[in-house]
Length: 615
Image 1 (cartoon, helix red, strand yellow):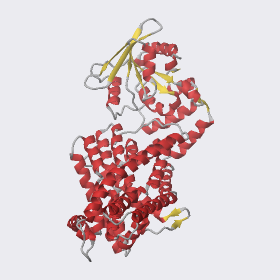
Image 2 (cartoon, rainbow, N blue to C red; image 1 turned 30 degrees about the vertical axis):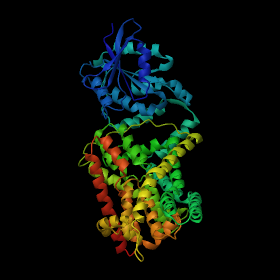
Image 3 (cartoon, one colour; image 1 turned 90 degrees about the horizontal axis):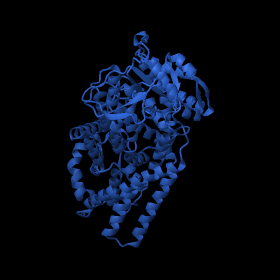
Image 4 (spheres, rainbow, N blue to C red; image 1 turned 45 degrees about the vertical axis):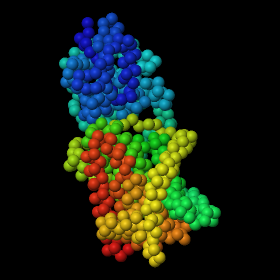
């Protein structure tokens, strides 16, 4: 007669616990929710070789007893006998993924240290062997001090041996089991690596290469410089690789503008096409090659498996400001657009972590800022090499992105000690295998992102540009009067310009900030339309816009404008998404306010420092 009456399956997510539970219990299951929480409770009857049966419980996946989610909290309470309506299990079955042994052994050691009857189910050994990994269960059992049984739950292999081991463990006297000394998480991770290494009989060349790459890319000292070097290369490529394609698009826009001017007589319609549509929308569309290059790098990082590793690399830095590596992927997504970045925070269990990530996501330099950076840098920063293969323009671009990242780190540090105070949560994530990106998937991803950019150019930017052109064109200036000063748009900018004059902004820059609230890149379209209306002999090209900026703006003024867009308040769409994700206007208004203050202070400091330095 067995002394134990209940057993619980525990382990990391994706270890195959549910498949093993189904294989062991069959149709003898019942499903409900734990009292007080919406976490599924699965229990079933496990028939032992003796003919008796015990209750088997399938607990939610957990990485540690230091819980960070409702699922993990339920697992901890059940194992410790603290869950209402659930007796403490008499024995524990730890399910490990044989193909990811080192990571799963970290939690296994924590379970074994409880000093309770414990069995290890080394699951999915067939997938491990397929990946070129052969393990020694006996060596693993010797290192852990508990029985280890190899299983393939989906093929029902090893179930008889596991059931026999459970029956034997059920007869154990818990008092006869020695409790293990408590060890820290770093010590468990070190032990997991050594145990996994000792239990490995054979490993394929591919796995050895992958392990070697991880030792370099995840190294606490080598990993961060490699990541930042990669980011530096990306921003150099945005300038160097895109130039021929951008020049071709610009020439195409200029040719269309020349054709319209030569074909149609001077009229309201012709001016709308050349000064409004082509000067405004065309000045943004020419940056499509840079956008594609940026997204190509991001997609390749995701497809190769490096993106998840970058999250681990950043975990130490983010923990220093009260966040975890879980926040890294939403923040990295925000480099494309803050909207999907904010929505991706749903994967963050801790509410304070999630709120902080939402509030700092706009500080990541989204792709909408890219046209602004490119046109201003191209106009005022010389195109020269500062070192072999390192251009000054690309270096300035990289520093702007770094400024946004540093700003986000500082803001997160301040928020986690004030309005979103709380402890940093732990971070564990399944690392995908390294693989070559699929060219078809890469091209589809690039097309989707290019289409989103072009759709914005054809809708939001087009509408904002046409409205701005109408405001700039009417009423008509009298002889000798500036069209900007005479127009409705000029009157609007004149009213708000005094607030921005102290930070070095001219009237055209102030005017560009208003439509930029619809979409950041509209600032470029606004400037292009403004100068096209003021200088009707100018071509509607990006080069013409750069020439106007170079002639009209001082270097301190241009640097202040760049500094403003590092922290510029978000577009209306992002604010709306933030309102939805935080269930109210409190935090979006807070976000909008602090971003405006940061942008104003940083732009002003940049302007006056540049003036003081004599630039």
